[in-house]
Length: 589
Ligand SMILES: Nc1ncnc2c1ncn2[C@@H]1O[C@H](COP(=O)(O)OP(=O)(O)OP(=O)(O)O)[C@@H](O)[C@H]1O
Image (cartoon, rainbow, N blue to C red; front, side, top):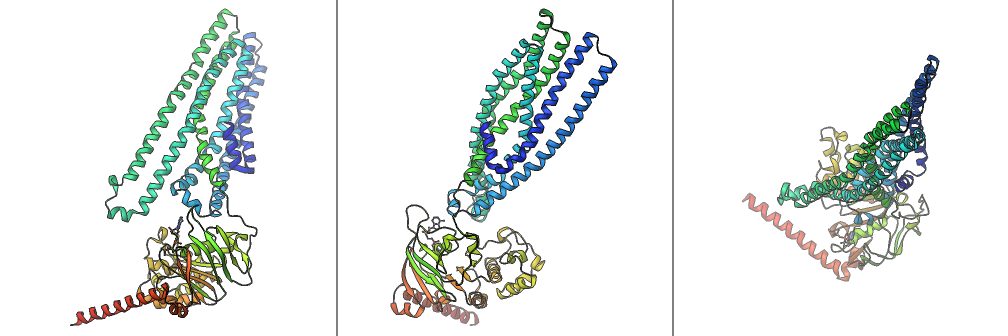
């Protein structure tokens, strides 16, 4: 239990103080509840002694009514506080974890499955909220009431107190064991449920592939297996804990018959006052039912162990370090200085990369698949940090700046465009939250998406499905170009931007790019060499190294990889044009 309190303290941070008040109110409520039994003893004693007059009855009734209303108010305040503060603390925690994840190196996502993150952000935090909102106060109430009942029972008769004490001492280790097992089971259960979530996410994302390869339904063994494991773990968790909780409940149920036996013995053999006998019976019924509720409450509280560890392990991931929250540059000259980079510890994905990309210039990155082009772009956005060497903007190492501060100066159009499940308007406004509708429309026109947007059911107010599922690849890409145009940032990073655009639109889109790239520091990844002929500098990458660099003319003169590829692409293009002409001629024959 102490470990759970430590976890709550660690996760709630300074807000843990806000939980003290509802916990104290629960304690007071429980103390007042126990005090009713004290008053009952006095009342019964007065009755037996014949001193129970109408005035005494009035006094006792007044006290009882006052305690009743005090309890009502205290319970109401404590309950309301817990109900309000629990969700507030967990909301803060959710935001804290979300913001923390945002500040991490993207390597974190290589190590952690979507299922794990999903389960932590949804289930683990919800469980934490349930514990701090409901279970914590209830648990405190039960413990205080049990302790007070023990004290009262000793006050009535030490032999009765001792009997009750022995039952509690025998029962509590069982409860403690059930808590330990619940904590252990919850580790396995949570891991299995994380696997199931990962599989479901994979299943939904890959539904097309699964359907094409008949992997849906029973055939999709991975999801099927993970569901079976979850079912097995859930059953195992219930069955392993059951003997302990049942034994605990059985022992606590013995309190009433044991009290009856010991009470009768004390009454008949030891001359105990009959009023005490009555109080013993009433008290035993209350302790028995209160302690019984612990059998489900305690394992529930202990199962928070794994959930807390999951959240703490995410929060203890080292975020990107930086010195400055803001980045102000006089120029946007970008420079790679002997940059090497590894995603994992072993393989150098980039080796000693050095180049400069100055203001108002375009630098093109080309090379075979896996040569490191996307990695270079990701390093500039500080998705990752270099393993050695440095990247500078205006002579300043980008590691000095918070990633958010850096990306404010960048407009990025990546290969895999992510669109929000929101209106078209808001999706474009991602580029500039303060943009007016007119500005959005102007950007959409420049990116050649205005026409298809206005043909949609609600125009700019049409909701795009999750991840842009209702749009074609080219449409998604044009919306992402509109975003970048709206942002109008001084550094432009383009990755495979023309790959999903249809041929008819490509020239027009190229104009939009020219507008986007004008007077900017541009880094563009391209596979079609025809689009980068005018680039100021072309870097040819192979296996993480720059094997050639220069402009189109000098690279052709070198007669190396670039010249060979350019020649091949030109021939392929001529061949396609030739084929198209022949096909058209055949059609009209
Ligand atoms: N998140 C990652 N974790 C580990 N390795 C990665 C990761 N992303 C890329 N790599 C590896 O780094 C190397 C360079 O990848 P990168 O995506 O930069 O190549 P690229 O030139 O952009 O390829 P393409 O033209 O196919 O997009 C590849 O070997 C790739 O497998």
